[in-house]
Length: 78
Image (cartoon, rainbow, N blue to C red):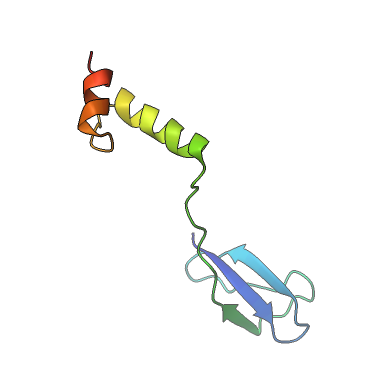
């Protein structure tokens, strides 16, 4: 089920909701069905050192060493 952002044409309330196929979303504030689908900004992936470090450790545990430099690979495989 995709998550969509909507703005109600009747009351102006902006909200997001999961939408099933064949289901018409309803405004949670006024119950209206005249909704305008909004463009959502995608969430960027995390860039913190902790997230990158954790992902690299997990990749190494699983045997995926392509994101390590050759020198780092030698250290890990010892």
